[in-house]
Image (cartoon, rainbow, N blue to C red):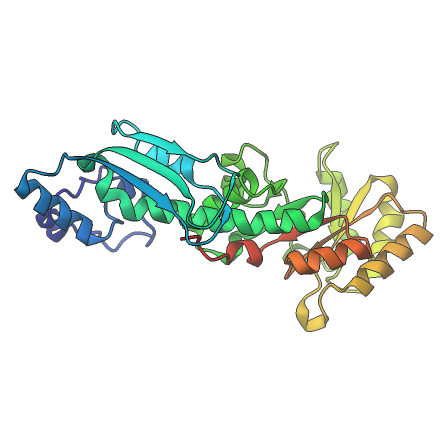
Length: 314
């Protein structure tokens, strides 16, 4: 549905968003200025009255803190066809505090109203990308996947996971749209709910093995019902070489995933001749825990809240 652009304060007064809708902004509402701060619409009115609305300007964007740059692809799409010139760092580039990361040149009328939107796009994506890169660096080459969609509003979950992959360096993401926008296929195992409904981890593991296409890694969550090491051995015995990994997601109420737990599972698998089975860890993962769990034998990590809750870089 078309959403008329807000050019004057009278347009703001006339705008009615309606109530039979989700609360997040549509693409059309963003493009038409519905998510901008109202004073930028006031500015259009005032500058137009002064005959200064089309004055050529150069806007320079910087952040008070350094980080990993992301979000510029959305800004480029936002300003597509406006006639402005955009010079910018590339997504994934690192930058220093107060370093200019983007420069936009053109008539003020072409992009001034979008200042709120531009800054929000860059600040949020850069915050997520920076947190993801911290995890990737801590993992020292071990794969890190972004599992953060459940921690943010669905309107931005795809933006967050794309930033974590494209700029942050994560090798995968669980959010379907986020992964697809990053140019990869979404990745994930199965939730605790599926195992609870099946009533037995081994039963669901066998069905999962039958269901998945050849070449798809068989990774089974092993902390739902029984001791993680014992459950891992049951699954490894049944699936044999087809089992790629076991995932530890033990909740904090049960002590969480500790280095001791990872070492025990690793040792028990090795002793059982299942050294090919990797240990994937998720649940409350951050860079500090990644470093410790790497030493204990974890092979890869699913990171959720640390990336999703990252503060915007502004």
